[in-house]
Length: 197
Image (tube, rainbow, N blue to C red):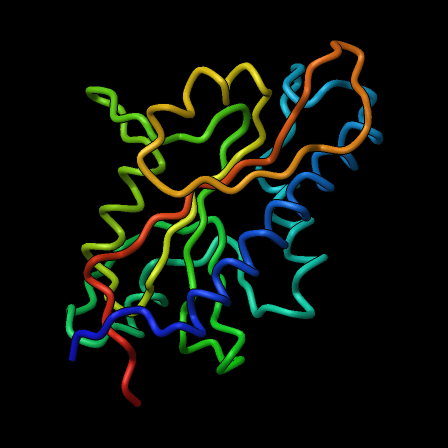
């Protein structure tokens, strides 16, 4: 049975995205303070630092897992048969309304220095990966493509962004005088079916 997104889930995803971006911005600031480097300076901040920080700071309100095998996620499908896969998803966020690891709210992929949305020949973006995941998973209403960026990146790319953008400014000042943000593109899964147990 295909249904539209319930109103309470829209409120839930907006609330989550705001908290997610705030925690992401705080994670970037934390790493900058520890490493004494600006957010996009080499050696680059590892993606897993940000996802782990978000898990630690939001885990009391939302059930989440990191580096989750796609096979586990596909077992929750309603109508798409599970396929064997070795792929992993950076983060899985479960719906806090049910507070169970059987109702997915969103899948997230992280990148350093950009929101990986552009399709380039011979290279899949995180957005392309998410669209492929949506063709395999029918019980997840949303995908998130996120990362830490500077204001110049956002100014250049924002007119071309294909999905709903959420951002939060990384607090504090930086040696290079740039403004940094944690940004996240929210994508809807058009194959989504409400799970019926």
